[in-house]
Length: 129
Picture 1 (cartoon, rainbow, N blue to C red):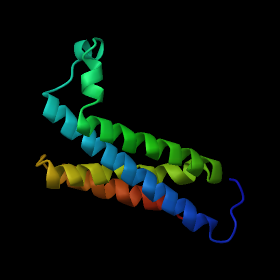
Picture 2 (picture 1 turned 180 degrees about the horizontal axis):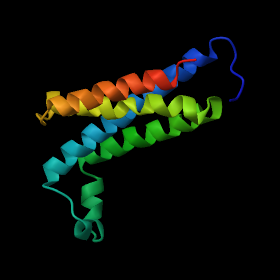
Picture 3 (picture 1 turned 30 degrees about the horizontal axis):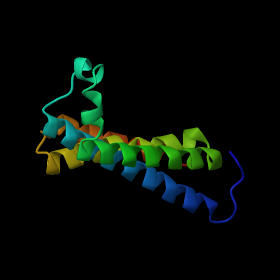
């Protein structure tokens, strides 16, 4: 790991948190966009229709959020070990499942809830000293 100054670990955690939130926001917007356009197929992606899909308001905002998070992730990778940072990024899977359940009315089962809990515990365990 690149040697972090005092307080450097905290700022890296802030960057990781922002990356996770931008990824979650990006996925949420892209999902809303695919619902709005009525679904996307490989045939649509391979045609000129791709431009209208990419510039759908939600898909476009989702791509911007996701890309911004990706750029910030490069900052994280330059300041922390991947084996330290990536388990925190895995929390995005849990957050997506919860947000999808709350706002998109997707199903939440006991198995999914258990998986979310395991992801969260796993991310913490991977970073204990």
